[in-house]
Image (cartoon, rainbow, N blue to C red):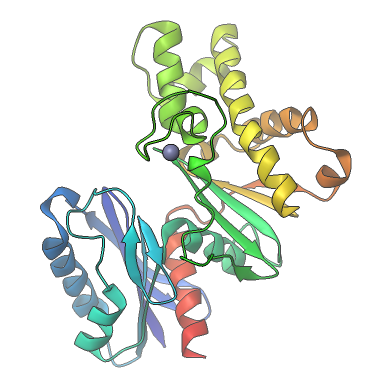
Length: 299
Ligand SMILES: [Zn+2]
């Protein structure tokens, strides 16, 4: 038995075949070409399903960027990265076309579920997941269940305001968390400080060479990150924070910076039971989490 799993990102679509036991049997990827719009994206999804589907396929599991109502499998909001994507009821389209059960859920929610099923959060019932990238995405698992909220768009951590009258955000507000603690924010802060464009890898290379100015920069950025995280810890009292996105490759080095910074901000009894881990399933987490949801739907 297998599941056709698809993870739609802004630049890349990852797809593959996942076993009911949580093993990624096959995986590949192609370019999203988001600007070409939803019709072209649907064509790609159909091609993937037709390539991978066989008589042992039990359903189609899709993780995707944007604000998604996972209860019905419809895109309900987000930026207009993929023209026409908002309003698409992908689950209905796939179920009607293939006669197989399907699910669609937000990518960070899927990453949280994937890490719970087969990764860093195995065995955890109360944890939060943050992905640090262009923005900051969030996922919350409470008592073993995904927290969706009434409109299914809970845990949009990136838009919590942490600075009054701060950097303009795409959401319309100023001073959002992701304007200070995303990778984009780190690069902006680096450019302001050093008057040159750097990428994340170059910044961390300098830090590992013990370059004091770069270390200061990363600590300043991490301080913003834990400003938001401290609030989340007080709300959810989690046993684990899973951090995903490109910077998670920095591993224990970054984890220790976050941990030390949190010690200045959060009461000890919250931290005593709290673990911070970098995401373990990287590229597979979205496909795994969506597959986990599909199995639950079929049950
Ligand atoms: Zn915002």
